[in-house]
Length: 354
Image (cartoon, rainbow, N blue to C red):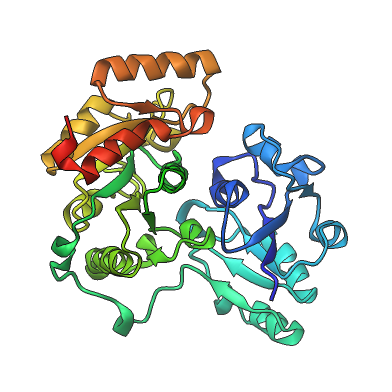
């Protein structure tokens, strides 16, 4: 069956709530994205809407228009990430429309399509499949932490952030790809629904895993990935932030996942967690690095999310942070991440490190 897919974004494509769509527009090995349904930005190229780069993925005003113009399509993907994973009621019409045209629907939200009798009936009637990526695994398939993580000899690098929706997954993917171009076998452990949608093979959906098994599922993903692929380096996609009050997260990667190395993603112009003053101010990069060090891990590079920055400002922040911290500061979207490769090489050959 063809993996050609359209993305449903419910008018949110140009907002951070469409970060699932943004990831899939940037790249996926699991699907071939042939269009995005997003009325406000219809008629543009999805890559231009995202970051000004043409990616030959048209934006359509409606599902009917996408199906008429995008060629054969097999999947519609609910490509948004809302607070609490709630399905906007406005999306149901698009989902039904897709099912009535024989599409299978892939949903990364906490609200499951397979729990909606009307949607299930439509899928059965028209032969489509409903895939709820975040449906928790059955209890008997979950793993408890064992300590087996300590048998891994490859360096484990966690890509953490000082807040949510900063580009942790994108940065991890770019590092994995850069390693591949330079002859290093890197694997990324996905920890959210978008990583799975993008085609990563090892991981788990952190926020729909029963808390008692988060550490064990992380360990199992790392150990099985390392054994099956013989990876030189393992990257863990971070979630949320160590101190974001809506969902503090990250210590698991450092403690249970034994990630002794961290790439820290930071947005210099973002003042409050999730842009909300009620959630508190984001602490300085230095204090986040000190916190990570208290867990026994080292920040080997900082990656900047340059939202609301001009290119000049981005370059100025890059220089300022690099002078301050004396570690590489990456601008992943503007310059790529190749400048981290010498550090990764030195982790692989500690004897030759300076």
